[in-house]
Length: 358
Image 1 (cartoon, one colour):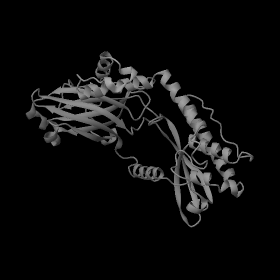
Image 2 (cartoon, rainbow, N blue to C red):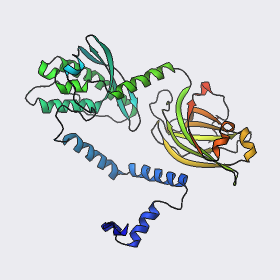
Image 3 (cartoon, rainbow, N blue to C red):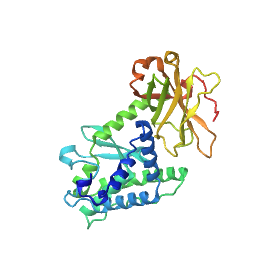
Image 4 (tube, rainbow, N blue to C red):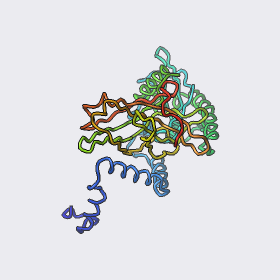
């Protein structure tokens, strides 16, 4: 590294600093947890948030001058009325909230074209905003429909009010836009925005699958990595991620943590738990826990996982549970195995160890 010519690597001390920062003396699990913590601390830094804000402003205002004005950043190429067919109607029929990788609303748009199957699109407010900005650039001398402002009132209930108000205003905007003269309403930038993308098809499929499970058991997934050390007779359990959690009724997010028991455990002495992740339904933990277990006892053990919401203003509540039968994984445990495990709502799971004994 020293011959690289970098000013930052001009001495042996510089190289040692880089080596030590990579945590060579730690296990993979320990290093993963340490780097995850560093990333979390960095994202929580005010300097990082200001940098992201400035970067987003720059992207919005100074998009590549080589890109054609009808090409939107979230659509890989331009489309037109000739490629997609004339739009007879477009209306936002619903919205839903998403919380990964950030909290935002997604608007579900129903687009109708003569003699073509109805399509369903999914767009964020900022994508509508980009459409309006592009139209302003393409038609600087024309009076476009009024676009809903970016005013945001903090607070969960107020955030939902903002989204619902925007839905009505965006529907009015779409209606007025499609009634403008053809050179605007049938322009490539408009038809590029209303083109059905692969991500729209994927989102529609996901919603249909969730609708098929409505009222059913699935309440998220947890990624677990298990490894058994025969020499030490120890089972390592790494809780990596949880995704697609269902929040408790009346809320739209959670402060989740994972609690676990190695069963059977009548005395409840095997309880361990992760740290609490704040305001997310898709937490990352990368935390490792160890249990002493004789190898011959593995076939009789199971790992019970439960995800709890520790929201400050509410009582702790179990959101979902899962059980991993270790007897089915014995042949894989010594080399290590990772699994996405489905979480189930309490109504679909046996009520074992689910009382709050934090």
